[in-house]
Amino acid sequence: MNNLQKPLQLFYSYAHDDEKLCELLIKHLASLRRQNILHGWYDRCISPGDEWANEIDMHLERADIVLLLISASFVDSNYCWGIEMERALQKHNAEEAMVLPIILRPVDIEGTPFSKLQFLPKDGKPVTRWSDRHEALANIAIGIRHVATKILNEKEKEKKKIREAQLAIMSPVEREIELFIEKHKQDPDVYLLRAIEEGQWNNKDIAFVAKRIKQIMVEMKKWRPKYSGKNTARLKKHKRTLKVMRYLNDNQTH
Image (cartoon, rainbow, N blue to C red):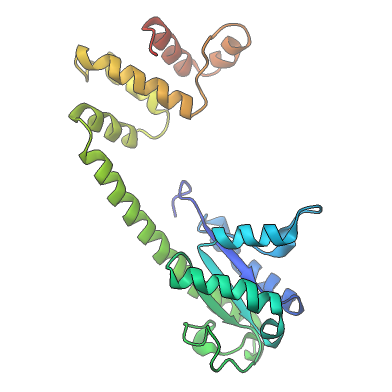
């Protein structure tokens, strides 16, 4: 997975009686975290002094995937059942998030709001019924990886669709510049200046390109209105950036 890809937000909804199993599952999802596929959150991430209900609500609203860690304790919990699960299913039905019920322990789930969803681990066999719990949790991790990959692919398709629509309404020069920037994601400002020096754009387009360079530098927090004193010392460590700054100042780009 591309390290530039923004990871999906994962929310764990669980009863505190199942905390040890939740933490063990978190370890099994470490590979997804290290590959920048998922960023998980559960209530033990709340810092001292924070409003716990607000923190839970905020992270639940941000979630792309919600794991319901099902057990008798989960079903019995008014907060898990009446607040977290209810909101998670609303998001699921609105296609704002994917809800995955994880069966931790044997429990009657017939007729529950999540009973028609696809369960993990395989065949909905409770984690505690597996002879090796790590095998069960690894099976869950594989299932979550499959779902996360599907969501990321869909997000990427939507992103490309939006980008194509944006490019379609641009002028030929604007489109050429944006495609150039996408090709040179590392220091695009430097490469744009080099392209100007190599004569890639006509004289009438150079001012427009220069303005786009400055905009990029502002977005990348590389722009310094004046390159003197401490700024000069800082920029000398990045000679190419200093060269771009001097070009823009010499051409009085606004």
